[in-house]
Length: 209
Image (cartoon, rainbow, N blue to C red; front, top):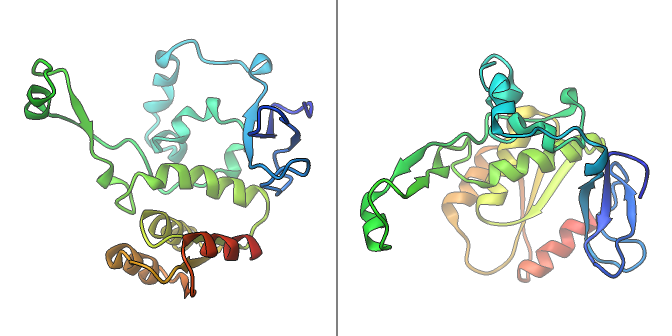
C-alpha cells in the first residue's frame, strides 16, 4: 500500500505490487503484469445509495455532473476535479425492448436496452476513454496512442481533437480494417500509421512510443 487513496496495483494476485497513481508505469516492475488503478476504500467516504448522487445530477451546468462517468466521481477519486477530461460521454438512453424480452422469455416492461450510439463518437468506448484520457493528463502526456481500427481509435482521436490536450497516434495492422471507424480517426486529425503485422505488433509500437 502506498498510503494514498488512489494507487496502481499489479493485477497478478500473487504479486499485487503497488505504485503511485501518477507513476506513468503500466506494467509491474516486479513481474511485468499489467497495473490497474485501485483505491483504499476503507479510507474513502462512500455514498450509501444512488440517492446520494441525485443532488449532483441536478447541476446541469457542471460538465462533471452531465458526464455519465464523472457524475460518479466519488467512486473514481484518482484525479482532482480540475484534471478531469470529459466531452459529455455517458448518460445514454434506455429503450424498452418488449419484443426482445418476449424472445428471451421475459414479461413486457422487464427488459431495457441502453443505446450507446448516442455517445460523442458513437461508441461506448467514450466512457472508458474519459477515464484513460484523464489519467494521461494527470501524467502530463503530450501524445496518446492506441492500436485499433475501430471504436477505440475513433474515441481517442475525438478526445484529442475536442480538447486539444494531446496528439492522437493510431497504429493499424495489415489485416481487415473497419473503414468507417478509421475515417473518424482521420477526420479528427489522428496520425494514422499502418504497419506490416497484426494487432499484437501494433500494440508493441504503442508501447514504444
